[in-house]
Length: 100
Image 1 (tube, rainbow, N blue to C red):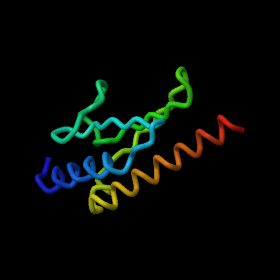
Image 2: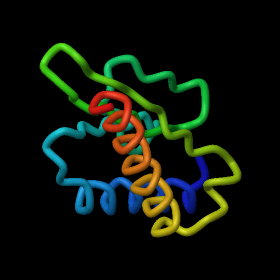
Image 3: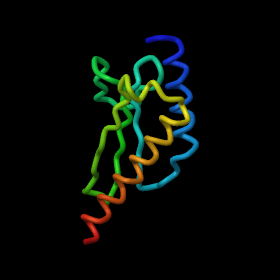
Image 4: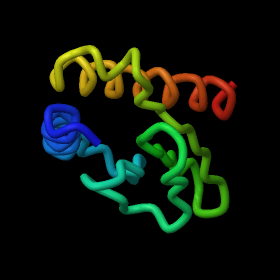
């Protein structure tokens, strides 16, 4: 991994950890050489952020936010904002399905 991309992804992880404080949302990272907190990390593909939304104790929904080549052209702040927006959108979708 290029040093500039690695630095950018380290900053993304730092920003995400500072922004996301929702108790219903768990975030795991699959970013080789930066942060791999998920046990099932696929290091052969694009790095990604795994979002788990705990609806109930037995109902956990997941979404992968892939950080592909196009996303990595943006700044760390833009990537973190995109990921945060995607997480909020995901949570809204699940809430609308679960709550009717």
